[in-house]
Amino acid sequence: MLRWVMVEVLRSRGARLALFCATLSACSAVVGRDATKTQSSGSIRAKAISAGMSHTCALLDDGEVRCWGGGSRKGQLQPPPGPFTQIAFEGEYGCGLRTDGTLACWGDSDMGELDPPAGTTFAQIGAGPYHQCGLTLAGAIECWGHVATDHQDAYPTNPGFVLLAVGQSLSCVLDANRNPTCWGDTPLDPVVVPGGETFTALAAGSYHACGLRSDGTASCWGNDEHGQLAAQGTKFTALAAGYGFSCGLDASGDVLCWGERASAEGSKQVFVPMEPFQGGAFVSIAAGAFHACGIDATGKVTCWGDNFYGQINVP
Image (cartoon, rainbow, N blue to C red):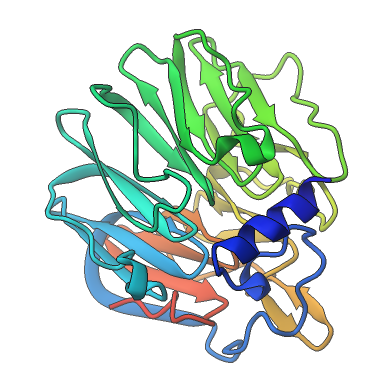
C-alpha cells in the first residue's frame, strides 16, 4: 500500500500533508489558501527553473541560483555559490550540477538526499521528493536518498541513456535510440510504457510521465486518476508534469495544462489556470507540486498556481 507508506514517511519528516497527499485525492480545500494570487512575475533573469513543493529555484544567467518560497529553516533557500549548469529541486532539498560534473546539494537530508555517490561525475540530474537521480557521463543511472520507498531502487543498471526525468514514484530515461524505459510504480494503474514510440523529451510528475514526439505531439502514461494523461492534440515544444497535472508549451509560447490539483476552487481542486495561459511568450516551462513557472525570451520568470508558501512570488 504505497500511498499509506508515503503518508507515514511525510509525517516522520514533519512535512505538511496538505501540500503532498500520497493518495492524490485526499488534499482538499487546505491547498490553495492564496488562490486569488494566481500569477507573479519578478525582476530576476533566469535560464532554467526547478519547481518543488513549497519553493522554487531559478538558475540565473550567471550560473548562480536564487530560491524563494517556504522551507528556509532547513536551508532550501540558501544555495551555495555557483556557477551551476543545471539544478533539480523537490521536497525540501535540491542539487546543482557544476561545470566539472560534480554536485553541490543543500536543504533537508533526512533520507540521504544530499549524499550523491562519492567520486561520480554527472551529465544530468533529476529530483523526486525523497531521492535524486543522475546520469553519469557514460549514461548510467545513479540514484540516492530514500529510493526504496516507492520502488525507485529498481532502475536499469546498464549505461547508454541520454535523457532523464525523475518524478515522485515514477521515473523514466531515454536510450540512444530515444526509446523510453521507466521504473517505479503508481497507486492505481500499472506502468505501461508506450511501445514502439520514440521521444525527444520527457517529463515526470507524481505517478505519471509524458513524452514529446518529434512531430510535437505528446503521449502520457501512468496514473490517470485526475486526467493528467489526457495529452491535448496541440503540438508542443516542451512539457512539464506536476502532482496530478501536465502542461505543454506550444509554438507561440502559450501554456496549456490538463489534469487537476493545485488550488482549491470550492470543493474541487483545479490547476490554475486550466484554461490556456496566453501572453507569456515562454521559451521553457517547469511544474512543481501545485504550481508552474515559465521563462520568456528575455529570461523573465512568471509563476502561477498555488501560493501557500509564496512559491510563485518571483523576486
